[in-house]
Length: 346
Image 1 (tube, one colour):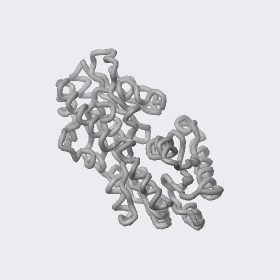
Image 2 (tube, rainbow, N blue to C red):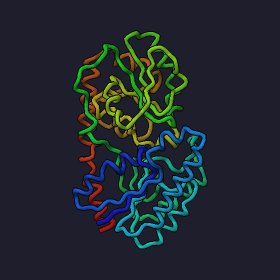
Image 3 (cartoon, rainbow, N blue to C red):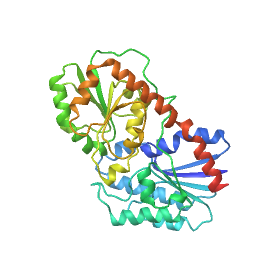
Image 4 (tube, rainbow, N blue to C red):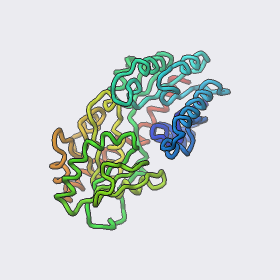
């Protein structure tokens, strides 16, 4: 079976963790993989440049071309839509007699403010309607699509052989409270700034480490706040340098569609997490073992408790790692993908 995978870009998180990391495993199972990206390796740098809008437009047009003018395939795997405000490419592409799987891990029907958008909603509904099967990243997204009979829920997972707890001893004695993510998620981190400032004021044994593709200005220049430039080569190393992982969110249609991936990354490297009780975070927390805190009010108490208690951090980190391997690893979901490909494209 030959499957054409059409995704946004080489380094975009959805492409990396919902497509690319599986290709080797798919090929070992006898699947011929053909991958087409819209954006190239320069994406993370280009989106911060004056020509960002032009770069994005060209990337989306390139993706649309791949989606419409491919030569041959037994199955098409679409990761998100070609254009956020139009489903025309998906509508036209469905006219070819090739089954389509539409994969989505975000609330594609809302705008950047987290509000429902009519145009985005139509584009999303079109992709849902013309596809033979859907893969949703969590329950909320599956329910929003409204085709539960043709929807499989597969969370965003991680290579737990690569993302492992650190083995080497720490290089310093301070506790590292860390956050990793793209600049697009800075508004959620901003909600935590007062708590982080309070933690730094009261705890001289704490460092806050932010790893992103841009500088987080609300904490720029603050003592014991380290801002690290993200790179795919050093992503695991920086995650392993954390002692506590942060995932603040606000409750909205946008965040309910997020798939708790930051949380899963932290769990995979064996560190406890402090996360907002929103969306898929609640699904991941459905466990008998505690893997962190979900504060409903002040975050300071949760962070202070973890900083104080090394044994608690180790217990929660170990429980999180165990859960990541069992339910959020490549091996845990690979059979679901293979069965689905056979069902839809076989």
